[in-house]
Amino acid sequence: MRDPLGGSVYRIATAVLALTVPTATLASQVPEPHRRDSAGIEVVLTDLTDRTSVPHCTIGRNPVLTIGHNAPDSRYELFQVEDARRLSDGRLAVLNRGSQEIRVFDAASGFQFNMGSDGEGPGEFRDPIEIDAIGLDTTVVFDWRLGRLSFFDPNGSYSRSVRLEPFGANPTGYFDAVTNGSYFIIGFHTVAPLQGSSFDPEYLNLIRYDSQGQVVDTAAMLPYGRRGWIDRQARMAGGPVFQARGVFAANERGLLTANGADPEIQMRGEAGDIRRIIRWTTPDRRVTEAEIRRYRQDRLARATSDDARSRVLRTLDVLPFARVFPSVRQVFLSDNGDIWVNTFPRPAAVTSEWLRFGGTGGFVCVLAIPLNMKVFQFNDNFLVALLRDDMDIEAVAVFQVFPSDA
Image (cartoon, rainbow, N blue to C red; front, side):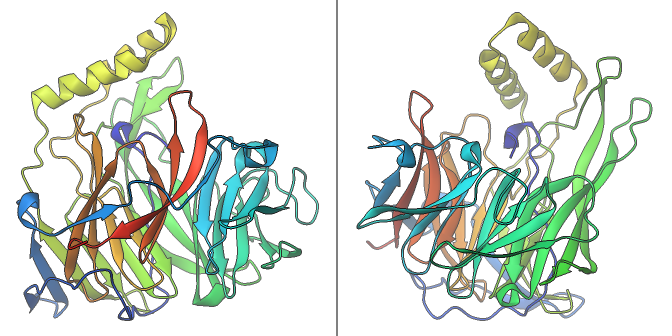
């Protein structure tokens, strides 16, 4: 994933299941007005203009499980962690891209086993970039370079692989398993031909595959921002700073989509139709000149050489800045049906803000976590995230999430 402040790519999707109401949440949903729009779609509206006046959730001061920091041996040393997931029995599966394998850990007894290795044979990977779990903790691994999904049973034994046919160009790396693994949704980036000095719109096509890896249909297409030349001779291209992109999340509970620009999430049904819209009001999202200056300063400060500084300057001199910040950067759908929405951070932000909604759209709480904490999973009362220390050593941690009245 790229730096979101520089125009990162996040997910979009379509529906394959109707959403169901979760059986439990950490806190009661705040009653919100329900109404119908002109198309008869239910809209749930929440006033979140003043974040200080709404309920707040918190995370535990210390993680309940950490893998990576103070590693006792090489099995616990992580490098290029791409994804992680807490399984239903509490074990933690970590996709360690640096070693081309998935490592499974237990909170009580530590390291359990590896799944996969470097190669192109059965159960091997060339570039695994995301994992999911289906059924009773069958782990599914998406290898974009080989264009296939590999399946491992709960004990770590290789089960089977399916090649995705046809496999499109420019996969984003995001996929979700739905209907207990009957379908898989993968996003492919449509690259616009770069002509002249204009910034042309691009799109993300969401392709639905069946359990045998065959294309079922093109499930959806959402905006993917705009892209144009920065320096044609140097083959440098990019898009406007702070531009919005579509995102999605899907699991057994159903599907969520958002265009990234507007403060709303669409809850969709089996045919892709919108069943409910979750919408909220926001503080002023206009991009100020002070924030543009702050962004430029931060980008230049991260340049570690004269050549890098020169490239940054050329980029910032060409790329336009959006006039309004996006509303949504990322979404998660918990197994219990709760919805987590990551809002777009402004340049001076030190925390990352997540909005939590219940399965029927009622607002639950705001959660603020450190900006450098990269979340892989939300599920009921915990989150799984990537951490880095001052030496840039990676660790994956599981934190408890507490309700606003805890």
